[in-house]
Image 1 (cartoon, one colour):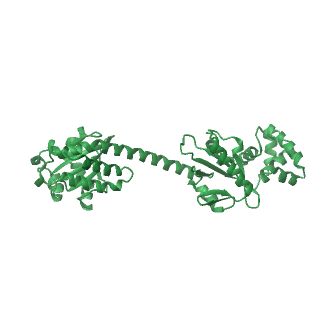
Image 2 (cartoon, rainbow, N blue to C red):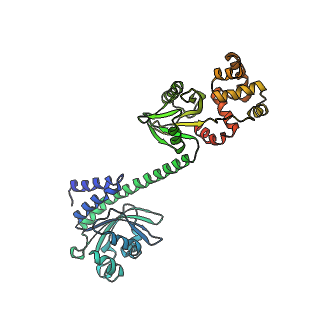
Image 3 (cartoon, rainbow, N blue to C red):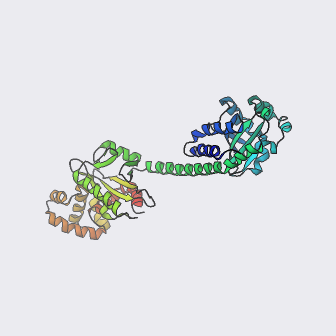
Length: 383
């Protein structure tokens, strides 16, 4: 029997391949050395299609032999054919238990493929068998060394459950990676800028629209991996939203976590929202940024009167708020006092059933037609 130290060393090498499959070569090299084999490979077989592939970490065979196996001889592998019904996760098989050497030597598989690489005996461990696809850890050696003995086969049987664990973990990681890739591809289709911020506020992900938003450098810039707003008040609102989420994480974002982003000249150019991603134990936050339409729709006042019964004066103030995102500036634009504008806005909020300035601006963006792009954002915010 192998010492516990030697077996543990092999297991350590095997588990290193979980996150770094390319490290399979050192493991296979050591396993071959321990078992007297000169060929080691990881085979992936599709039983239904009669096809097979060799992972690029194989030892003891060259690229031409791998090509020959994948393009022709995988379908003729008598060892796989004969043991297919016994292959399940954690199982181990020995070629000579199923195919005698004289029988093997009568096959074209041995004459044309195995003999040129000096292989006559094999044993393998199955790490995965799902929907007819198997992942086999295989070692092979020459007829001169004879069949693998019980001692060598016991070593492989000891490793087999661990090989199955590695395959299961890699499969789960692949599924997560595919889901992440699909999610990122979907986010890249949005015109809404989406940033994912880690617990240290470093940007962990930014979709295409977010990269374009940063490239404009109008309202947000990235410094040492963190976002900050050019306008002082906008940056204060951004920090307040981040701190509020960190201290009181919630599933839905209240209105006070929506804020206006202004450029260096103080002109409102975007609306942003910070949201804690639900179910994320790491505390990842999403920052969603919607550009404001640069030129108001000339029919907006009529639309507001029709939809909410706003008077002409109220509709003009609502449009001015959308343009300036500031009560003081909107009032000055219309020749009103700030106090008059505030009182009039209370009536507008009530008629339009919105809660505050940011909510009013978002509603106006919706009406203008830009809302079609923002719809997905609100679904994210309100999850």
